[in-house]
Image 1: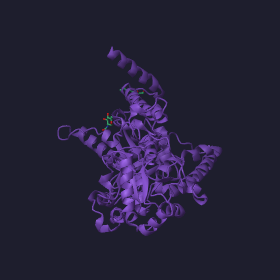
Image 2 (image 1 turned 60 degrees about the vertical axis):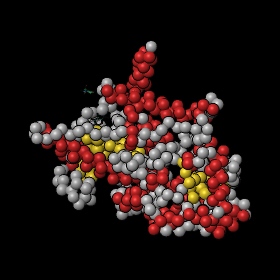
Image 3 (image 1 turned 180 degrees about the vertical axis):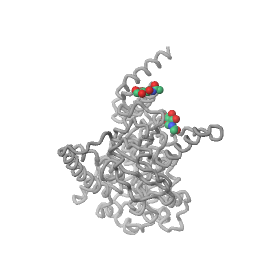
Image 4 (image 1 turned 45 degrees about the vertical axis):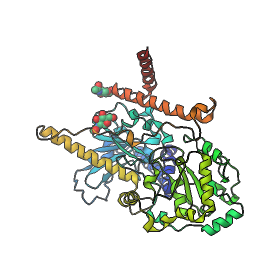
Length: 501
Ligand SMILES: *[C@@H]1O[C@H](CO)[C@@H](O)[C@H](O)[C@H]1NC(C)=O
Ligand SMILES: *[C@@H]1O[C@H](CO)[C@@H](O)[C@H](O)[C@H]1NC(C)=O
């Protein structure tokens, strides 16, 4: 029991919260502690043979009433009358303690829970899923017509390619993803603030040039996750033929990390020793583990913060979010690794050209209105206790949407002539839609058949499509057992093969 309770709030989702990781860690330990306390209380009750809740729901009606209420919220319904939102991925449930909470959002209220017993309740209006955890063979079935599905996925596309296929993403009615097209976009999730970008250059150009004369490479690479869909090492390996790169991580390692830094090399935190160490480099290779529009992480923002120039591959539309039009070097703008290396050498030897990339440190040189507006208008904060975090924010988004939908449906039932039937709403490929992984360098047809990357990622991508189609079929057939997924996938394959002949 205890290990179940503490195991429920795993560390894994917290890693995705990046800069919040430390905070999250504290929260996790705290939460598992409460799990133990809860366990004791439950035992107490059982021992005394006292009140036993009849169902998950009656248990929930007694849940505490949160004191916070949005300023425009005049929802006076009791807990019993509120729509329920179920967090299918209980590990992410953003409340503590307990598994059920009333939330009073900007204009309306809901009951939220991580108790899966409410799955098939009429009052359960929506189910929230964490993309990284979402498995077609574990989906809550049958899917009830009145229930919407909501997807929270801020992490890498590599964690779940089901969501990158039309049949996968269209299962969801609401999304919070890194894409700006999503319903509740998390695009700038790794950028804490404008001040973070404006922080003065950590190591002066004079000092960087002095270090260069001492033999420090112009370019830094530090990566310990090597077998990834973006296949970044294949590109960096080629680049290394033409320019000196110091590589400290596990991938393409050519230098030992100083001993005192060993523990922090893979940490997402910003430990000062580590930060000072990497800030000495003029250029940071910043290649995301997966390529997808608007998927940008600390690999990009951290060098900008430190005043190093990111050499970037990841979101193909990264330029849309940069402080101005010369603050990042985009790998895919160069015809070859050699051409990129030549350009980096040119900047390395021409101080006037190099410093142009750091002009955005002057606030007047931050000219990108989209970036400024994005930071200004997002309602959630990063490392900012004065703002809600994006889990609570998305939960409220879903709550408000559901209350609005339920009201529109009631109005329609009352007066069909005067009111329009509410339109169905679902996600599209623009909410995720990451492309088929391609080799980091060269053409897929030139790779040997036993190439490690080739054997993993393209297959993973297409198998995910099978699973998305299989789940769609399970839902269409009103199946209640998700483990029938494999049978449905097989049936689809068989009928396709028949169709061809
Ligand atoms: C939710 O999405 C599904 C498709 O996955 C759709 O059939 C359903 O009508 C949508 N529900 C609402 C309320 O929009
Ligand atoms: C779907 O399955 C559930 C439970 O198996 C059943 O209660 C419901 O009536 C079915 N719905 C339809 C439309 O067949």
